[in-house]
Length: 465
Image 1 (cartoon, helix red, strand yellow):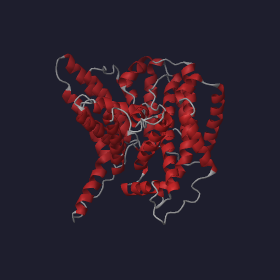
Image 2 (cartoon, helix red, strand yellow):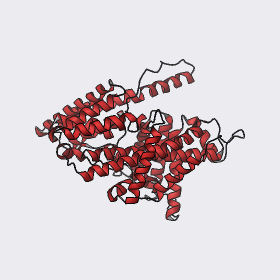
Image 3 (cartoon, rainbow, N blue to C red):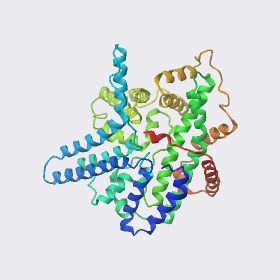
């Protein structure tokens, strides 16, 4: 089920809110969990089995880790059970066919036939998010930075909570443990939640979805001119930001409506003056997860500069692979890691730090655009073609794509630029609630709803991860 669908907006959400607030306070987590199972299982009920496995394994492992610790016994075997189960499920569903296809390519290259045919595997929606979320719980209990949940129903609710289940933010248990048992419900929270949800939906439908057609045409064309390559790359740069940040706004808004405060996931990343700063502002819940559960355990910056560079590069490579099983994602991770290493080598400053502030922001933005080419391209060959066009090396046969840039696209580009570089964050606007912004938002939300009625399918980019 999608947030941007008639089923969710006109049926699921109103009925859920009614059922939730009619439920006695002590049992509202049960209502939320049941609704979340319905939400997740709407497309493929059998995928609920995977979530149940992760839930039961991590609930049991964390309790055994805690009990063993009190008795002076190592809980490492139970930690390994959690790691193997969660990462094993993720590896099978997300990377099995990538491994098979890579091996087949090697065998074919050396004159042999394919080793085996790819398996018939369907990637469960959001598996990357909820496996990382449950893993963080078990690891935190093992480290002693969190206590195991007292009630299974609260933990099950934490794992399957539908607002942020399929595309984040990745919420750590210790940040909402108290809220699972003792959250408050106020009109102020609910009002802020509605505004955040409306803002996220408007961003996604009126900017991300409009610019998606520009990006798709540019990246799907065989050969494009330099101008079309830049237009398509910029369109995707805005599309992925407003698609994902829009979803995060909706998730945070839904959480506020039912008393939860989730951490922010984006903090104006395209205003960054370096790639290091960009990763402190982009997909914050993932970048901090990678820092705390991968970079720091590898040694962080505590084992000398060379080891620091290796750790940065490795973490970003794995971050790229987390996004998708393709060489383009690995290359994207290597690209990001290379810039982080360069900036760390340069005294934690970008090479363009000598420029004025606005110019630093522009250069960092262009570097981000260059990275998104790898993220969007279907394969490395297509990415190279787009790079050639971006730098003016398009083949002579390249021609402009008819109908690529229309007035509605101009409006969407302008709106994106204003929201990114001229207005405060959604979180600040939701808190302050300027009257002019609230009135404008109601109009834009209404327009977004009208637009949805003319679309048969409105996917979110990050559902594929």
